[in-house]
Amino acid sequence: MANNRNSDEFAVDYDLIIGPVANDRTMPVIKMFLSGIYDEEETIKRLLLQRLTDQYAFKSDKALSALRFNGVI
Image (tube, rainbow, N blue to C red):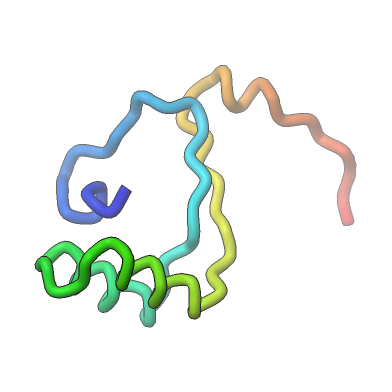
């Protein structure tokens, strides 16, 4: 999915995409990976240290139809 940050085109062939939220500390690591300075193993190691939370992208009506309202907290 890192290529989605380096392109104007976003992969839309999935109903649901789940992945870590990028922040100010994440972007330098991703840039180092995209420029070839870090390999995949080094990139993953550095990102895991950041303990990022996940985000959910519902990309289709099919994915949205799986959601159910349970109430307000």
